Length: 109
Length: 115
Image (cartoon, rainbow over all chains, first blue to last red; front, side, top):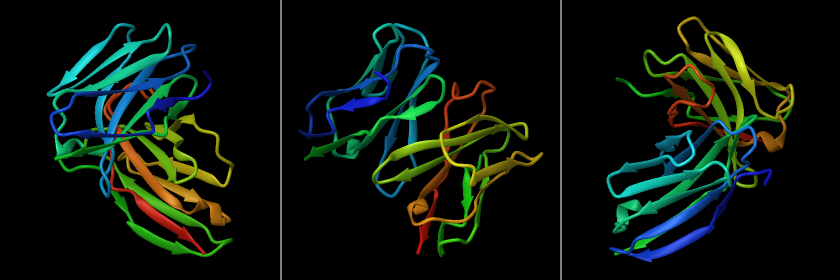
């Protein structure tokens, strides 16, 4: 993988559902993986920075895992709420910093 | 602490002109990075400055340049503007010393429209 890829592109879930999305990134020359939450008309908000294989980070109902050997990270949201609706971006630092296109999450009440 | 601030927030220019955008990082942060966001290309890294030195650079033409001052404030300049430079320009500051290793705190962005 040469670029950072995120899937799915968009996701619609009901309030209370748990969900997860994937970020795939180049595993060579890897230094760090960032996750951001970007709400419309606001600035991206940092969620996690992970550097080590096997890293797991948690912030409230949101958690993330990192596999640097195979080049992927999962972001999990437990019990989605309407206020979780946003675009979730990942960015991988290899030789340079590259962003995925994001996963747009919509949580319906 | 005050957050990252960017000025101006909105800007309209014409092709061929040049533009300078400003970013003031969070107090104590020494790293400032710049990003361009367009609908077609998504969010792309422009460059990062640390202690007045450009430490990392993305894949953008030489028309895009920047600098950082001793108080960590940073400016980004785009010369000979093209229509495709219309975008949201975000800056982010970070307290860490390693490029891209620290949490990035983003400003509100400057929306540039080139006519």
